[in-house]
Image (cartoon, rainbow, N blue to C red; front, side):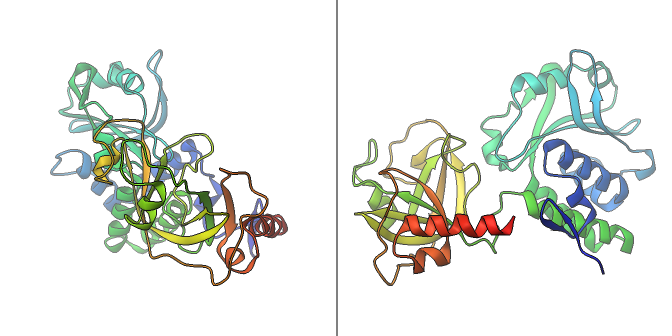
Length: 328
């Protein structure tokens, strides 16, 4: 079998040809929904209280435009029972209230006599995170619900078990495609995000930043802020005292606007959103790995093996860059 490469990467299924933009993702989702009845029914029933879904009467529309009311990502509707508008975002992002309010005021939507009319936000945000930011209803009393890509992936995997062979092939490729772009921490990745830890006390807390890592086995940083990763890394490493101290696998992460919910010693106040990581056991270097040529608060990426074998973190960073350049 011949191998296909696109932009230097091997292509193993049809959906990888689409790309990873929001439009690419939603069009791919719509295609699978239109070709896999079990999956379609599962998605609809997770959103609306519908007893029966007649696959032959369902219409799925992408990029539907209405003057002054925006362009919807996906609409799923039949003649009598349900009309669902899905607005999808990449990463831990949500559409603005103004955007989904426009959709609620679309004539084709609010004038319809269909009983189940719902606007769905779709992203990697959990339902709990989204419920704190999404309105319950928007104009014309249209309910707003949220679904995460993890849930969509789970529904696709469950639908696979009840689908025919052709549908199974499509669902299998779609699931592989989703795993490829979701911020789900690629298990095979050995890239480590190296940050400096301060001996100062965290604001309003009697723990230092080092204490939070060493005693609470957690770490936090601003969400979606310049200079910080927008997606959780697989591994994170900490340096202070002029050298590398430990490397940790990130076992779990949440996004929160109140750090007290995750670290009880932090003040119980609402603030900007933060990633909070739960750290796995420390991997300690067997030799001293000095910081090297990195400015005081500098954050760098390095491959795990380079951090354990190089003499300095900056040397590990540079070796990682050379390896990645050779891959292109």
